[in-house]
Amino acid sequence: MNYVVVSLLCDQFAKLNEEFGKCIGGRGEFHGNFEQFRRRHQAISHSVKEADRFLKISNVACFCCHMVGTIVVLFCSIFYQQDTVSLGADMTFLYVFWLVVNLFGLSLAAGLAIVVNNAVSMPTCNYDIDILQRFQWT
Image 1 (cartoon, rainbow, N blue to C red):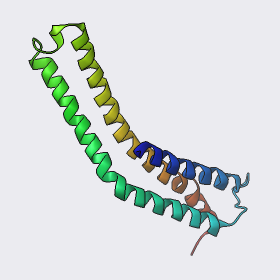
Image 2: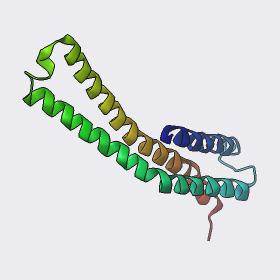
Image 3: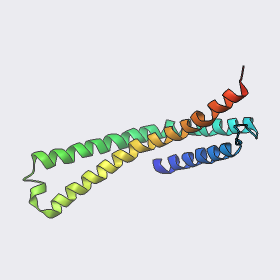
Image 4: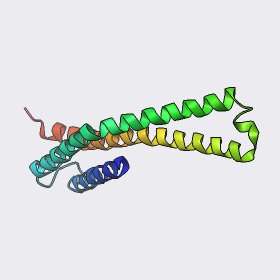
């Protein structure tokens, strides 16, 4: 569920960023309704804030569960080799599979936060600063 929500929000930011980029001419002049882009960016940012509010508990729980799972699998594989990995190829495969699943869950939980932060901050860094410098807001 987290992945779907993050993907939708990132797609909205990507579309807004693309449309905003098309409104900037070759010499850096802006042709379009700046207020409309500001409102859309603000609405999407508000959606990100709301999504973050209800997804952060889920994301933290996912991260913690996968971290505990990774520690347990490694602990059992290292300190209880006679009872786990050395029983046979099927048990070794099972422990390696659970280790890979837990590591994938960890990377997904951490990666989703990075993707949202990157999508939110990119339009601000790329375009808003250039426009503010060109218009010389006082």
